[in-house]
Each structure stands twice: as C-alpha cells, then as structure tokens.
Length: 321
Image (tube, rainbow, N blue to C red; front, side, top):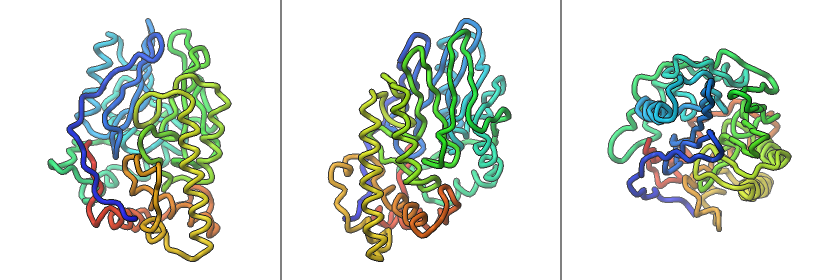
C-alpha cells in the first residue's frame, strides 16, 4: 500500500538530557527528515560536541545550549557521518578541531556548497509552513581523519570513536563509545521511532554494522534521530533491516520494481515509524547490490527520491527543519 503525506504536530523545543555525569544528548523533536540529535561532553578543561545539525538557526540554538552548560568553547567536534543534517553547521564551530572518518571528509568536499544549493532548490524536501530555511551554509569538512578509529578525551574521560567497518547508513558511519559510562552515541546506524535509511550505504552492511553494536554492551544509546534508548533498540532496528532484506530478495527474484514492491507491501508494525517512504530507497539500495553493486556504490539518488515522492502520494517529502 502506498503512503500518504504524514501530518505533523507542532514541534516542541530541543531538549538537553544529561545521560551521564557531564554528558548530554541534545534531542530535537520530532526526529524526522533533517532533524537529528547531537551530543555534548563537558569537562573542566575540555568540551566535545557530537555532530552539528542541518540549518544555521538550529546549530546556533545548539551552541547556545552548550554555552549554558560551560564557559569553555567547543574544542573538538566529532561527526558521525557526512550527511548535512549532522554536518551543515560544522562551520559555526570555529574553535573546534573537526574529527571524522576520512570518507566523511571526502563526501563533504565532493558535495561542496553547490551540492547544498542543489538541495535547497530541488524541492524534494518541503516544510508546509515554508522553507526549510537552511541559512547560508559553508561546507566545513573534518580536518583530523582516521580510517578505523581514534580516541578523544574529555579531561580523563575516554571516548572511543570507531568506524562501523562497512558501508551501512553511509560509507563513513562512526560511533562514539564511552566505556566507563556504558554509553553509546550511535549516529544514524540506529533510529528510534523513525524508519532507517540506507540509500547511500548498504542494507546488508547495516545488518552487520548494527548487529556489531551489541559488542559494546551499552546500557544507554543516543540514536541519530529520536529519543534516548536502551540496548533493546538495536534489535528493533535489526528487525526492520531483516524485513527489508527478505522483502528485497523476494521482489528481486520475482522481477518486481522496488517502487511497485513498496506500494504493494503492508509495512505491518513498521508503518508506525515516521518517514515510511524510506522503504522505497531501502529497496532500491538492496536491489542495486543484489544486481552486483558493491556496498556503498554510488546510486542515482535523484531518481530514487522521485520514486519516494511517488510513494508519498506525489508530494514532496515533509521536512520541518
């Protein structure tokens, strides 16, 4: 069954949740398209931020929230991956060393300011009240990069930053693990209440990468979108990914186009997740790899997004950022 445009209640303000002593999750309702979570770790000497966000106004609000916690500037900004909802505001952190996987840097540089302008003018993402108002964004790629991982310290608190090991949500997903606190910033490897999105990564890779998160034994997980959760969120995401993979294998074998397969599929319990049109993009990615493409290989994203709009009743994708 096809999706219809979803209605959205007015969004509440972002909230700072102290998830461990001096460690905060900055949760932006309602976690849908381009509305991500961030983090901030406050020590006596060091302040570390996890991700920026999609618009200038939202990033400035995040910086104001950090200023309410500490008089120290942000010394280090860690990007969990390259997507603009996590990196567009990087340039506003002019005191910070920006840290991320080397492919995160490559992707931001490849997209550049022209890529941001294309997004603004494409009309794929639309706020019913006008906008989104992205602001005048300047690309700011990380300038300290790694291939497997790096440790960052907030005073004496160890933060282990590690690459997911395979394309999953993107080609450059990383997580931040605080072993002393059993706390994991998982980036967009996990969504809480939202549909996972694998178009620029890999469904098969995501199954591996998300399952591997269990090795940490986290008690608290800050997802890339949606409320803070416990370890059960990992299995919830794996359930959806398994559903997509099994659906894709059958549809691919039967020769059914991804859009038609999505339109004829009952999402069942997954229909409760926001942004359900992502099923179309996820099936396109799975088909692409079933046809022999490598994980993370470049795909015709514009064509797929157009199929997602068709699934969405012919309407642009709702973005309240």
